[in-house]
Image (tube, rainbow, N blue to C red; front, side, top):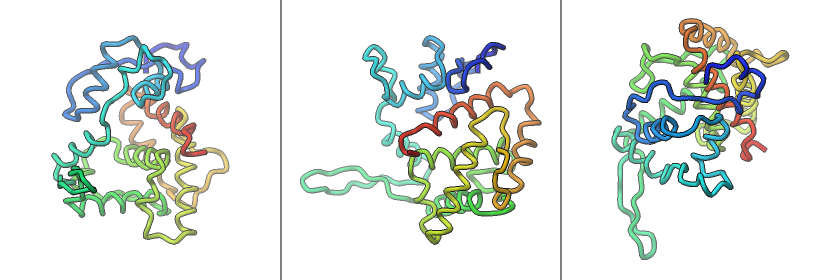
Length: 234
């Protein structure tokens, strides 16, 4: 987030962001987004999300939209060995599909999602995709779950649960989205303590280690605040 004391007068999503480090990450879409943001005028979180997703009526800025996102994400997962590429015939056409190659990675992800959504005390075991030494293990997981909820795909990880359990899980994620779409992060008064009772302390421990990076974490809250207004949540 741009360091400006007056920014607090604006809602999180309307605060201006700037790129302070454009070092390549190896993730094609992320690198493209960083390059675009670095070379363009400074804009708000909400504006960048609208432009990169193509949700804009400004024809002068239609070029900001990220292209072929689904296919490029799939290719990235193929490169990581999680998916594989197959050619399948659909009527008269051969089309590339990307079935799961590493079922273990998918199972680990589903377990992590259900853990966040249903466990009273959330413990995140280390694995190849979430090493013990990676920063913000809990915050990354909460952000991922909230993004899946906003994109209306969270149910895919909860299909083995009963209808009642899924409804409780959705209610928990709704609370998480409300709590972490504000800055500073924090539980809302009256929030449920039955699920994820240790999450607030776990996140506080992660944040307290990087006090000099609070402006970056503020962007996480700003992105989640945009998710709270997506049509898929209505």
